[in-house]
Image (cartoon, rainbow, N blue to C red; front, side, top):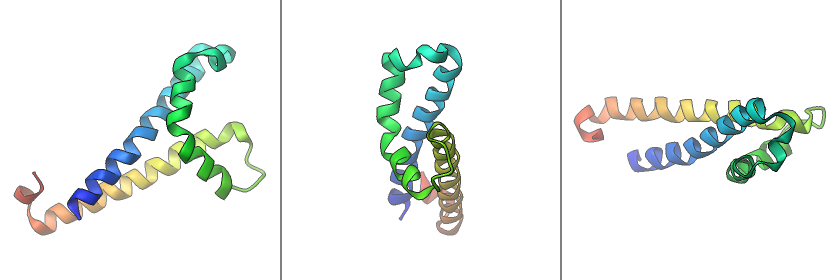
Length: 98
């Protein structure tokens, strides 16, 4: 179970950083961000998650807001997984978690 939680944390960590990087480039590059190679790379890394969030959000949510919603949803799931991992480590003993 601990290995599964570690893997899940890792899988969630990648899109979190990609979405955070996208947000940073959104601020720094402005309207020219669509031509930026790194922005496109970060979009590619986070695309599976944004596609899923686009499908589960209502049509009223604008496409430009989907990455923000995705970030907070993935962050929430990451925090839940982290707390579950902490709970498991407390149950089985801290030494077993190292």
